[in-house]
Image (cartoon, rainbow, N blue to C red):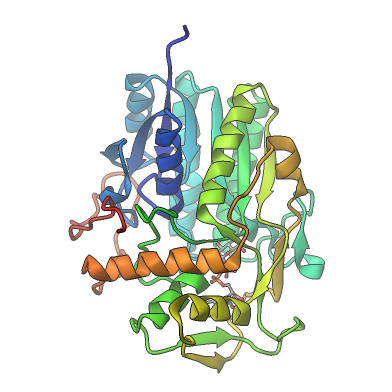
Length: 361
Ligand code: UD1
């Protein structure tokens, strides 16, 4: 029988990466996680080895690829906050684009056969009609989207020049947490709607600001395609199977193909909590498109991806349960945004203990 090779998961201690690691381990894969813990948490890595370091550190990555005999890389490590990318673009081009270039350089020196890349719907910018297909011309409107699009281009050019085949997954609005409550979204100073709504429901914030009520949408608030993180994680395993079976390099939208408004999301979190989420109507947030929904047939056909949690109430329930769990762990405390540069050579500051590994009762 052929020797089982390993998967290097960069950013595997983060929100999405940790859910993918969990499913890979459950599927019997050998996994090694590389994460600098600048935004991730060691405790989110369940039953896999964690190496603390930077994805942009080619020498380290090359050593890991050899030591662990990796034939696959799943690349999540990145900064992902849009307003931060506008304020500090070089940090995004450094951490997302340059680090990806260094990672690919390390892959070139090792026997990596396939790459699954964490991309974003932010590459589309503001598509007409609010719907994006994979062949909709990318037109990112912020450095975050551009930093990811450049990474996609590098993957494409590298593959064309004989590098590993890849699947780039363009995520829409990821939400929810592991249905068994083992891990979840622990991001500090979160900006994403579902997380902020859950924090507000539990009294960690006084109210939620609805950014814009005058959009040309059914109820005037922004519409997005919310996808449960466990379904998204499954798409990565399906992409791996596809690549192992010899599939060609490709780029796929990851969404359900239908959207919900901000008010619908707040209603769902309110239902999960048993009372309405306190909110205030505010001005539009600069740079927000009115509607952004995936055309999502391609991933189902090509990867035979079969989502199980296309249910806004389930997304809200699992998010809220995790948020309560964080409370019980006493894990919520003020934590400043990272000020340090995340490129090689600057270890992150120590983090408070954080018991992600514990199961919900
Ligand atoms: C998110 C991601 C982006 C990704 C995109 C895919 C971040 C910061 N953004 O953007 O990278 O490409 O999904 O579609 O990771 N809203 C409020 N009040 C709040 C927060 C949000 O009204 O407190 C509204 C927004 O105006 C928007 C909707 O909720 O209409 C979703 O916003 P958010 O959860 O921040 O995600 P996106 O901005 O869509």
